[in-house]
Image (cartoon, rainbow, N blue to C red; front, top):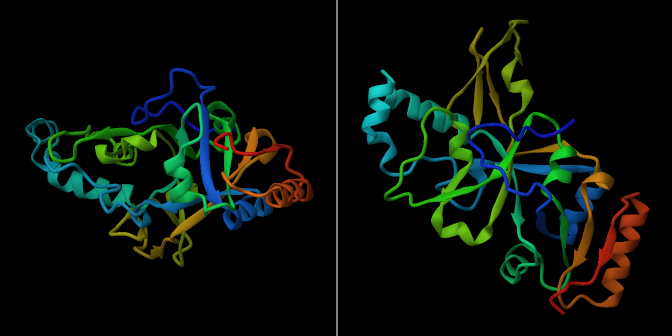
Amino acid sequence: MAADTHHRAFKQPDDPDIPIWRYVSLAKFVDLIRTRSLYFCRIDQLADKYEGTWPKRNPDDSEGHKKYKNFSDLISTFTWFARNQYVNCWCAQQHESDALWRIYGAPNDGVAIQTTYAKLCDSLPYSVNAGIVTYVDYEKDIIPTDNALYLCAHKRHHFDWEHEIRFVYYPEKENELDCECNASGTAFYTEPPSAKCGQCGAVTILPVGRSVSIDLSSAIRSIVAAPGSGSWFIDCVADLVTRYGVKAEVKRSGME
């Protein structure tokens, strides 16, 4: 069991043991350790409306039109595909981020899950693609058009401070939809959020998120309490970790 780190759409860290962080509220952390799974959000549900879309110049790319006969249709199909994928996002940094604490960790009662890129990849299934997000200027740049996952691996350069590591879940069930026709057919993604059976045309409405099982004890290195958390909060987090059988150190923030 290991995530796919070889897809051409995703760059890989020079050092696979680079520290990565995920900042969450206590409620989301409890859900993680209770279900022993990571929550992947459908990409069209993310705050940035440009997620899973092409930069402005891509549809008019002359090279793309030369390479593909129906380039405009390809662009549209890849958009539907990308915006029906599911993502889970982490930050690759050697230290904590004050900005990410403020945005994603609830004041004084959030936690940061800290591990390494290699450890998390090893704990996820092969149906997850993993790698570094590439930041581009959506007004000027063109991204590769030969695979839909490039749309999931790129973001606008306004977000480059996030240093994002992204995990993209491609549900295997959408390759073979079990429909009323009793035939397993190829799934064709239509406008979000649905997929259509290639045999009978039955449409499956896709959920806004999916949970992917993970080996928590091998995936997590430590859990850091939000800056300003009281000792009672750190004790509560430690108690939760013990109660749910997660083997990870609970620490006070290094920002204090």
